Image 1 (cartoon, helix red, strand yellow):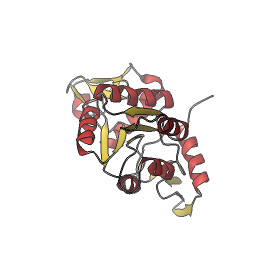
Image 2 (image 1 turned 90 degrees about the vertical axis):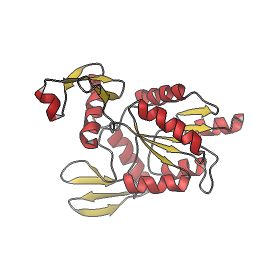
Image 3 (image 1 turned 60 degrees about the vertical axis):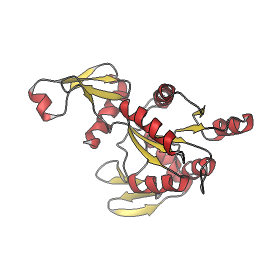
Length: 227
């Protein structure tokens, strides 16, 4: 189900926001049901339910209560959310499941902290990051926004505001032009494994440098866009 959900979001980001399209669920097609895009999510009017899986999020932080609160709010907003309690766990999750569309990360975590996590993933991607943390010192905020983050939110925070900021970042940046997964299939000839920094060309694996991987990520994210 997630695969066509992601493809639907790509259609949405190519200019169909607010327009209708035939529902891909066979049972709904038989009833002549149509979908209407709202923000980055799709709603089936017949089932009165939002189809999850269209937008993937990763929440990273060691505060279990905050993780639950943020995840529940984003989930109700129609986003598919994965959580990790440390930077290293988040890196392992990305290696296992592939890149998300956006990461929400705390700064104060055991082991690999928020800044170290951002440094690790931004060596080879331009993955959008929102920082959600209790640290409000000016120098830390400036460092986070200047080097890593699209947005910076301090605790305590409004869950509704978090959702609004997530949607704002995604509207400004735009969605990835290919379905995200552990190995992203570009076509029958080429696939990309961003987490392990390699490509599969006609069945043969080739390692990439971090710079090559990041350039490829940016090109693929903006595929089909015109200046």
